[in-house]
Length: 144
Figure 1 (cartoon, rainbow, N blue to C red):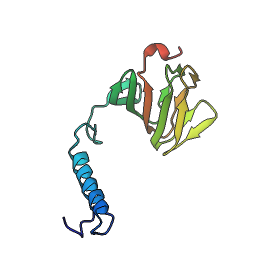
Figure 2: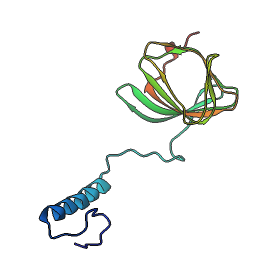
Figure 3: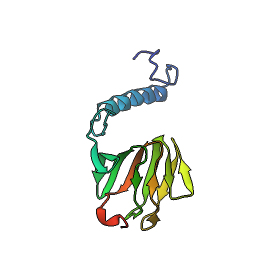
């Protein structure tokens, strides 16, 4: 073992417990680096599908009725009032959103819509890209 290896936080020592910690740390790093169970979707990967006028959707993951996805809204786009079957989390990545007539937020903002609650319509004057995680959207959730 190399005493100057930067992966060993403790200085090289004759202390067997320090050596064991260093070996374990290096081994765990190799195991983690070889783990292929993660899901990564690069920005240019995946397919944007039309959802509504001026709104496109890119599914990242669906598991047990919960969807992680991106929505890209063009300037002037609108998501009608709707209900959520489950809690839905939203993070604005780009642009600005208005929820109803009282809430407006921009990049880095977080919004939680509780399951079963009525969600006011969502509009954007600037356009926006948002990340959402919640129930798979269904047409019967939209209030007509």
